[in-house]
Image (cartoon, rainbow, N blue to C red; front, side, top):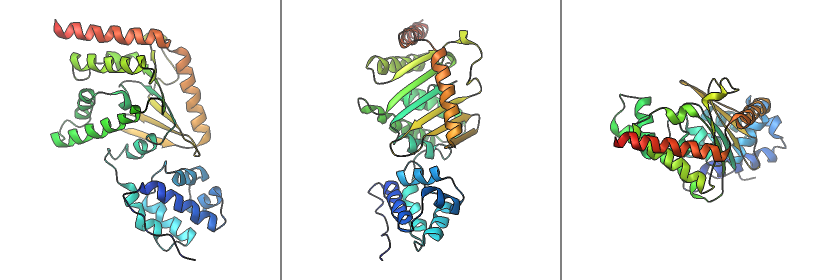
Length: 279
């Protein structure tokens, strides 16, 4: 039987790699869980590789070639499927985000990337590495802005964001930048493209007080949750962890202002930033 052909990097290589993985696994008569045991990952991780929501790393490719007897196919092709233009710590998350059908996110201290303007993103990236060359900061900013094109579609993916009031009041880039950023969020909300709620300071302690989180749902693949702190980030697919994170997000939604109240606060703060800048 002929083995799989090398992938054409111009034609969604990660999706094709996932399809070839599924084909090779089924040819060997293995379930996702059984293959996962052979390469020391979970069955859901194999499902995410097959769906293209996870990028195959060289170590996994090598073990898959051994387990599935694919003559080095996955090792040869995982590099073509792994090219990315994002910061190393975020590239896997950004690629999964692009394939999600629903995104639910809590922004603790910053406006989440999908809602950022170029000026806001540039200020955040510069703060992330004050010594980085200007060209590098611009590359990071361009990558973040490319992510926001997910919102060009009128309805997909569903994006539901809970913004901590701290993210609205922290002046990133100056008052003019903040005014533009909040007007942008308000515009998306008024066009019914995103659901935005504000978690006010008056709530006090809450279920996510220690950091931000992002939940990602897919068609035909397990859900993921991404946790982010100071130089400490992790992507999880464990069902119990994902379920707990969804419970936390539901608690935040219950504590947050309504959509109408949130929009009023965002627009009022945008006006305050504008007047303060002019004065």
